[in-house]
Image (cartoon, rainbow, N blue to C red):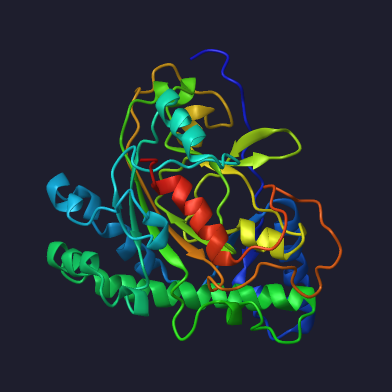
Length: 361
């Protein structure tokens, strides 16, 4: 491919958890200022030296649910009706669609029909120890298909929730909120049942439909919670919108690090101080744009291997009214989605989830 445009990678800041939790007040102040600036500018960070060990991440990526026979996966399918009431189960290729700023289900259905499908499978999971999961037939079936998988999900959930709690406390400290558990207390008790876990499996496919724009792995979208913890294999493909240049920039994988992004609810709670970034998944940087940076070889194979990512999405309790946090009285720069008036977290999440998973009758 001759004359391909060079796109420089996104300069997503790297934040060290050791600095955020440092006993040195001076070092901690510097790290908190860096976190604040990163979320004001990019809406995303790489977190290194985090509390989720490399072995646990590798174990999470090693589970092979998506390699099971399709007939087995269908037994834990997410329903296309009322899916927003219980975001749980497997979605086949084309069953869900990520969109941005399209609120009419019928209009979204027209987009589905006119555009290429997202070439991914998804497994959404409830917190396995939450009250909502106690009657989960899908979790019981998952344990039969992959013995020990629900037990691992519980371990993973606890590790992710612990990590997001540390980050939420940092955000409260940045805002000068004396009770650094202020945001965490908005999340459901006694267990965090309004957060959920998504496993994404992006199918192997030819490269040319992605590079030409005729196919997608994951459409441009924002996340609709507070914080998103993203773990991925080393294949790459994540891109984030550069709002100044108006282009998507690749975010090449960083081994041992996780990405933590701001979601719509936190952007709203921060009064636009922190940005909920538009992002998408396409082919890896070195295939789409060349790798040095930019000189892709004509001899490269027109094939793309599969990719796996795991997303932990953090929400307030569904009954929480989304309003500005203390310290966020001043209006910030960001207003990614039109969102006027008061709305509860549950209303917002169900609104977004219904558009993603449900189909008009």
